[in-house]
Length: 165
Image (cartoon, rainbow, N blue to C red):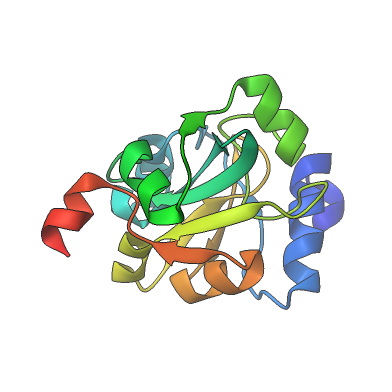
């Protein structure tokens, strides 16, 4: 029931429904602000959490959906995307680009589409979990579904993946 969701989670639920996604946004009693918190609340591996991180790539917002098991290698990712520089967005820049606060940024439901990269490490999990627009809301999805609903580019985003892949 989307009526009971906070406004930003409702926007995400509406975007998911419009995209034909079956998974529903759920509000957790405890925070899912970090991958570790979300994994603990859901009883899943931290790598199955799709962290939604906003960066600036040559000054333009870039959403990176990364596995919760590692950090984004901004230098390597910039090279793979053909960009000069990728840097972490400020909380104000994140909210301006997504309409959502850090710790609850969803892959969808933003004021305008964002260039998106989806971490190939998420494909190791049959089911992944992504933020639903607030630090307490999440929804189940898959790697392929994340790529489809965001129009994202699947890429290696962390150094440890380059060595392993």
